[in-house]
Amino acid sequence: MKTSFNQKDLYWNPVVETLPLRKLRDLQLKKFKRILEWAHEKSKFHRKLYQQAGLEPGDIQSYEDIAKVPKVEKSMMREIQRKDPYPYGDALCVPLEEVTEFRQTSGTTGVPVYQPDTWQDWEWWAEAWAYLLYAQGYRKTDRVFLPFGYNIFVAFWAGHYAAEKIGCEVVPGGVLDTEARILKIQELKATAMMATPTYVLGMADTAKKKLGIDPARDLTIRKITCAGEPGASIPSTKQRMEEAWGAKVYDHVGATEIGAWGFECTAQPGGLHVNEALFLMQLEDIETGELIEEPGRKGKIVITALDRIAQPCIRFDSKDVAEWSKEPCPCGRTFRVIRGGVVGRADDITKIKGVLIAPSAIEEVVRSIKGLSNEYEAVVTKKGDLDDITLKIEFLPEEEKNREAILAQLKDQLRLKTNLGYNIEVHPYNSLPRYEVKAKRFKDLRKHG
Ligand SMILES: [Zn+2]
Image 1 (cartoon, protein in one colour):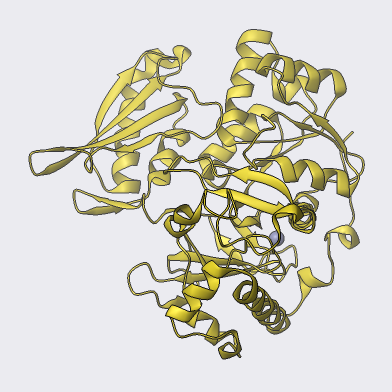
Image 2 (image 1 turned 120 degrees about the vertical axis):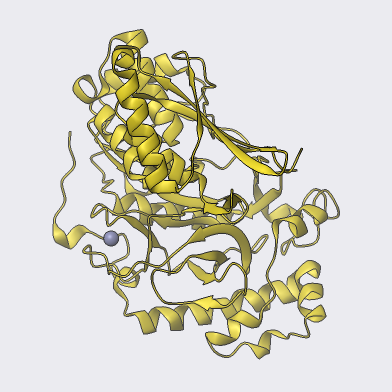
């Protein structure tokens, strides 16, 4: 049941996805002014923020003016939560009875933020996901399996609705356990699925070890959409997933407070398109805040959801780090590409022994070494005044005999790709923590003593 499509059938929205850059900017400016006025009028939180900065919505006349609008940090959203109108606080722009969806952030970095959406917002969520699924080749002929817990986190909820919107057949794999999910995929001959990279690899492991099923050979999944972790944009992790499933693996980025703002297309250009019809993404220098338009320079993502009305996301300081790609994508979309996806979090990119490092660089190395399992953990500590980094790994049981050669290769690659020396700790196979959803494999313990 493999899908096929011709060149003419590449885009969900052929008009906006190929708009010349200048027209895209005009569209973004027009939408930005509209959402800014809306928030200024309807939300006390936003009005106060702009008044304190001496800014009126009418002050924004050009694309460049947008940089004058104050940014919103997650901590500011946290402060208004659980206040009136309960439980969202005064950034809510619609009467409470207009809210149809409740979701909350996963709270891996603190108290969760609650996110209200109206039905119009929810349709917008599905529309954003439709762009990305269509770009990844989802069509009416697909039977899509969703192996995730349908709960208070937004996760793949909008992916479910978007797949329906495209016309796919959607199988909700909610409360089933991993084995039952795999058997259902096999029985129904599902062609596509959506999951976190951690779970994609975990499912393949379970299929092989517990059920004697080789996903690449015995199952019919041919495309996988990932979200929630950067893995699908890390070449070695992507390769592990694609080999395990015999499928194309595509990345997608989004967040509860923002929406589904970026996606990889079937051309797999080594990066993600930003959906510039629905979002305005700007890159700012991490230290100076200067706007970065040129390729090849890393900056912090400041992003606006241009059409989301219940609790608007305007100039949200996402703390994600990315850089613009030099090359346009061969798929023909004019939506710009961020090279290598989101390359880290501004909070996670840290100096160890004076060297700037993004945790994803460690993952790239570990997953590129054939004899190692998918699991690892990096722990940074302080010994006296000196930073110390320990990398915990597991050998695959069948590779134990090549231990010394693998270790030598690992140390070489780590030094080459991250410029750091590590204490390597070998743990027995299957003893490091396994994660179902979002993994926490990088631990910086220096701040906590
Ligand atoms: Zn593309």
